[in-house]
Amino acid sequence: MELDEQQIERYSRNIVLAEIGVEGQRKLRAAGVLIVGAGGLGSPASLYLAAAGVGRLGLVDPDAVELSNLQRQVLHTTRSLGAPKVESAAAMVLELNPDVEVETVRERLTADNALELIGRYDFVADCTDNFAAKYLINDACVIAGKPFSHAGVLGFAGQAFTWEPPSGSAPCLRCLIPEQPPADETPDCAGSGVLGAAVGVLGSVQAAEAIKSVTGIGQRLTGRVLSFNCLKMRFSSAAAAVDPSCPVCSRNPGITTLSAENYRR
Figure 1: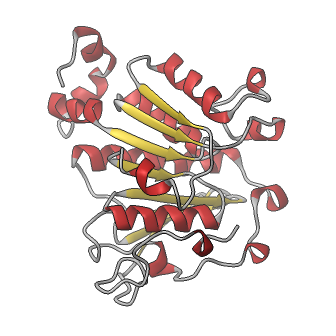
Figure 2: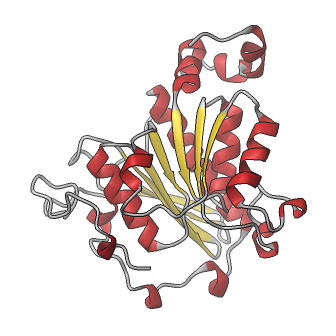
């Protein structure tokens, strides 16, 4: 995929990076990234991927913009209140970079549509805010052999890691937490709060992971879990091992298809 003069100027700060160069920028232009969740994590992830020149962005979110979203979801503005998040997000992305092709899906990712949607893209950013969606994305990406970035934030702190194929080469979410925690035992942002800037940091990490995966540069967060505490301003990284009995990414997985009953909300 060739770059015209305007694109060369737009992406010049990428191109002068020896690790990316023209060839890396062409890879970004040819790539598609699916962002599940156009909220706190999805906002910085979408904006930085669009700015970097990723050719296709998929935005999946069933919700409309609410006033309480604006504290952290910088894809949206006061004028977006009441609008579908995917439409508000697409407008912001195209305002930033009209070169990007945007696919909007105003529905929830489910066991029925996940594999078909994920199959259209090269990388998936899990920018959701609930465990049911995170386990669904994890299982779908492992089954489909699609690399993905997981992130989660609550309060002032969050974590992120990346999974890349082949299965068994890096731990997936089920290697770390085999079963989805009960919904009534897990706190959420509405009840516990979340700092917008902390979400911005982890969403930016997800964008960086997607860029590195697409261009094949650097070290990804495979085999490691990155933790960030904004209140203490500390980053830490801990090794994470593959579970040889993981129900989805082991040699003999118990989960080989997606069933709605496995993803309780």
